[in-house]
Length: 559
Ligand code: GLN
Image (tube, rainbow, N blue to C red; front, side):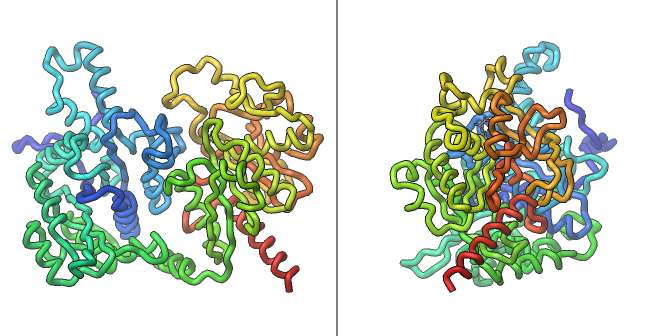
């Protein structure tokens, strides 16, 4: 039986109590409304009023975790310290708050059913009963909420993925409905995010989709307390009043969330301006302090008034999906903020480099970044992009697959191993400079079996990496199966590609740097998972620094 910390039977009423308060965030009308950002913003505002929060996400799909999915499905797979492969919304949570996240912070239908079925197979757990969605699946879902409500938490924020009306979300919605009965309605707050579209032809904002969406929530038995309405245009008070009346919420609980012109970091500020934090604190009876958000306001000002500009090419194979490299794009922004620079990203499909040539697609950029990835498609284009960066002295930053491609490129061009490759792409290559890690040979299942999560790494003194981090011992998050083949390490070093970061036992190459180049650095890990708007990751910061320096020296040449 999963433990239920902090749950006490309330003698008499039969209801259960947790000390923590609970916020549930649902979405209606359309998907992609930015529920993740809104949930992260709610967490941030409460945290900055002195409350201790935990965030989690429920995802209604049947995959046990998103690790087995293509980035084209739900965007990037976000990796946590403990190696959990999670939804990208957890990236927003980590970037906006200090909420502790671990593998309990993202729960899918698949994970719930896996647990229920395992218990059923054990035999005694369900004591001969028919195992059903209600109560067994819903109990399992509620357990995931209770699990986060430990002594050191004031508010648990649970985001429910998907859109009201989806068949798949129903057990989750039923569970959060039941939850209020168990802990007391006064300890729960339901926030529903909707869209108020503007119809050009009518010249009007339309509230009907919101009314329908809330209607569906009420059919399920949940009356939202707060509506956050995404909109392109300001919602006039009389329209807000109409929404309040038809949706049975207080007038001041209709909160406008207008599209942001400059940056997503404005979202929490606009929610404050619309009174959201006060409303939540009051409704849940929280003992909160004053809002401490001055640094965030300063950050937004910096984003709005950059002093420099820099163009970075991101060369990948999932370029068409906006969210496939979400944390990479975010980390570039963070690095830009630390230099007061606007980072313009040129998204380049790696296959196009093979057909059109590197100069055509990368000419004029100030830096080139190759992110992680899987599979053969687009590899040769990435290798060409790396060669271009190396030969033209353009700052280069390779991440995971980006580093593996950098090693292949170097081995081919500088050592003369013309068919050097990774065994991921060519099993029979004469020169497998990248090969499967020793402990991966016996692995047959794909889900959750890569080298995942936080691992230590030791840096070489005087390296670019050492300069960036300012220390020699670091820890970074990983997600890969392949590694630099140590049989080639010495030859790579002789030819000028130095391993400047290795695992403490020296067996795994974690970072390589190229001598005789202003800034050429590639890493086997994923630094993009440890960058924050208020504290750029040191490698991204120095990559953007080097790119800015190149741009400025190019400018000087032309004067
Ligand atoms: N496909 C490579 C590997 O498994 C790189 C993975 C990645 O870029 N995350 O090692």
